[in-house]
Image (cartoon, rainbow, N blue to C red):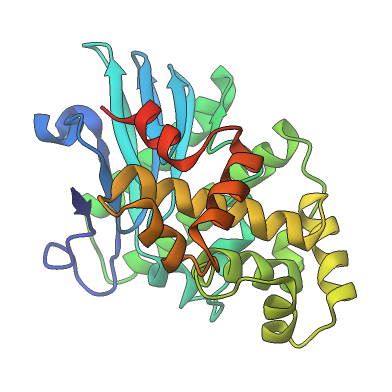
Length: 286
């Protein structure tokens, strides 16, 4: 299984962003085998319909659907119509986070690294037109790079990310404002980047320099659940990726996720998903 990375040889160090049409890509881009993304990808579907799998989440898309993929996520084309097309926006984290001197910057948007809500939006016609207008500007600027293009492209990307974040919050009734909540954002980052090594609520509290009571308050504020439930669900989400996209056996996966025994992993997995890890693998095998 391969990883789809940003081609740094094709772009200057200052321009780590691109936007193009799906119809311009080689046919292999739509290959049904799963591929991991090594960068941020956003698909804005403009024509056609079909289904795409992101990790273990299968999304039905149509004209107006927007799909979000942060690095480390697996995508797999399940089915699509012959006329399918989309804007594809790709960028490296450093292109935007370094500019704001904020390594948590992209964790502040609700549609990236969110296990609690879907990884997509469906847009009305006027919203599609608004996004399309910004995407066309990005494409035009990339085709006519000037001395100040990196700044203009960052401003366009930032504008688009904020527009999408506002819509995501409205559509999914999200009340938390991550753009101004650093503690919730740090917790979200740790859940994503340290999920295999940080196992218990105390591990996260110690890493953040706060008490168990405080981290539970953050979890309630961020996800509407206590920290223990959030950590358990995120660990199971990581387990699903490993079951689906590696050849490791169940005992190996349990060990890498720091479960004390494979039996404990099996029991927890079944409690969260309703089936055992082995049956989950069998059910989702191609």
